[in-house]
Image (cartoon, rainbow, N blue to C red; front, side):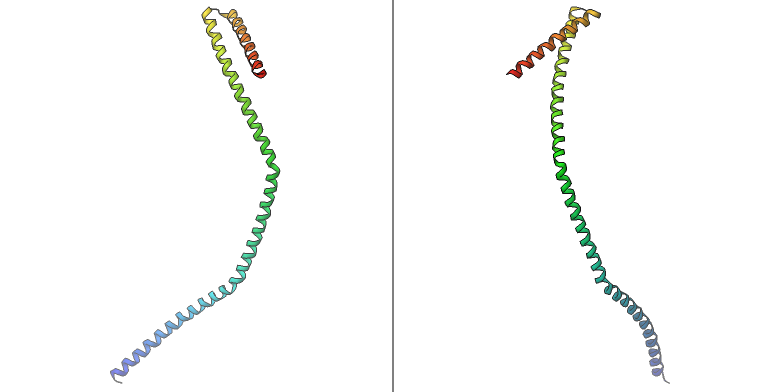
Length: 149
């Protein structure tokens, strides 16, 4: 054998070794592709199941939404009543605040008169009570006059 024969033999052995490695790699690739094929074959069935469940969820959601709408329509008058009660209580509270402010002013005016006259103790309390009674009577007369007008 000459050198050319030995070189061709080495190239042949190397080619055989590379072919064996390529064969194993291609075999592994074939196994992976078979797994992908099995997965792709199952995919339409799984998509059909997912779509069926999605349709069921949408139907249930529509039923629930319709039920909620019916219940909200039934509760709407109650909300209007509660709103009217809140508005009425606000008006009552604001009128009570106005009365309280006017009473506070009249009380401070009465207190100033008690200090002015240097009346203390029981006499001061009597004078303050009389002043508040007079002021309340005047407020009632003013309210009655405004109702008549």
